[in-house]
Length: 316
Ligand code: MG
Image (tube, rainbow, N blue to C red; front, side, top):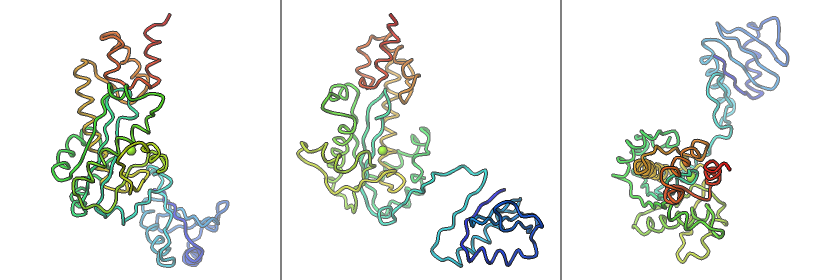
């Protein structure tokens, strides 16, 4: 085990004092000292980093972490464990005021998938339902597999009010033109589900949208829409910061998976998600089996995949 802590000057001084008699004769480059504490090797570097190595490194590291916290109250101790999966460098800041509030949240799915519809959902999570959702593991919505989603979402929707919209490919292909892009479609759909949700007489403190465009751009997309939900808090990684967004994301995915399976079944071809080479391959199969027109019903034609499918079909 290998644990690294960053400690302040005052802790460093305590360590120098404490390890005085345990120091090794040799000091590695850039180190202040290297010492043995039972079977842990402790190295303090000039940078303030301390490395604990050995089978009980965690115990020694925990002790000095405590010291650092006691001497520097309120300061967050930087800690790294080797062998541990690297987390996102920037930890997502979760605002407790928002997290613990009664909120409406919205999120969409399917916008990066060539096959299948776009699904947008708004859900309302009352404060009182937060423990129930935490219990279900909704907090880690991103990490959930399709199987987990199929199991968990029926439980969620028994308690959590929501509004969803499905934009099928036929409608999408009609809507998508020079004048309208994916983000505008998203904005219009988010606004629709949010309107329905706010009219459902729910007592919310925040409306949170998983941010896909800056707010002024979002509202610019909606400038010709007669009724617009305005008081929105846009948050990136919204599903980590609000359970309402997390629920909206899970419900959207649930509906998407079902629609996607239906589509696969109706074609007799198992559709791949995303927009990679496998998608091109399957697209070609569809064209061979049903003709090019069929893609209008099952795929988002403005994606680059369409050209690739056409070219693959006709190599001349
Ligand atoms: Mg999103």
